[in-house]
Length: 302
Ligand code: G4P
Image (tube, rainbow, N blue to C red; front, side):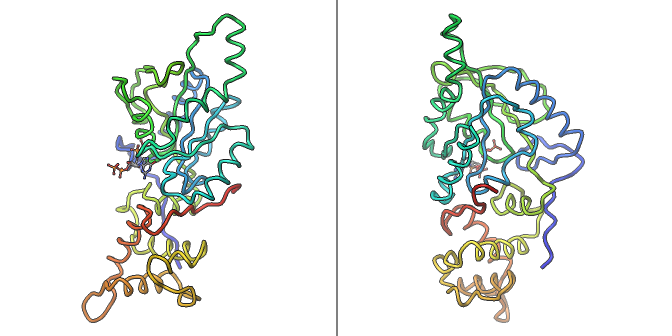
């Protein structure tokens, strides 16, 4: 089957995070701004999507962060497989990062972020204390790709603060700080970075999760690829939600799987044909809202 062209490139930067289109000049400018901000902070919070921990990371961030302490926030953990999330957390911790899983929509676990930040900075905080700077505020910034949940997390953290949160790359910035907790200040503007869009599988996974807008993609093709991917992870997924037995899926390609899903749901068009467009939209919606189940598409250590 032909793979969809899921590249997120274009000529005009958009201010809407859903439709950000990256081009080299835009990327260079963003990178420069984030490198500048990096000098102002003590630690960095890297926010990723718990369903696609590999694909939702930016390829140059480690270079920008250097040796600065980092906390990886696996956001949207409510939609991901909890067993896989535990493995990913261990993977990030092994690399020396703080790591936690949160749901910024409900706020679950968000209160664990600040203690994690203090933990990764404990040596520095001890040094400050020795130097008589015990009251020094910790400064942090949040970085992540579009749609990963930066605004949701910041708004959760900033409850009670009047600071306005900007979420646009390449705009004039005020570099304001607002307090989150007793000892920590957060940069008002998150760093919006691009994903690894030169990797077709990354583009596909971003599209499955809805991080890339559907109108630039072929919905049916995307749904076919998602079905193939779900079958690879476990045929039990389709059995549970669509009552399609594992034996029924054997040897079927995505198009045939989509027909089967449509048929099981009674989505028929004229002449007894399956309305595959409708089935595709339903499948993507059910996957993105985790009605199909809490599924992680990428295994730890990729
Ligand atoms: P961004 O700033 O990084 O671009 O992301 P933003 O916070 O705008 O979040 C993008 C979408 O992801 C939003 O959904 C938001 O509600 C959702 N989201 C963020 N964090 C979580 C989470 O932990 N769990 C779940 N389930 N969803 C999360 P939306 O459809 O664009 O808006 P809305 O439906 O919330 O209005």
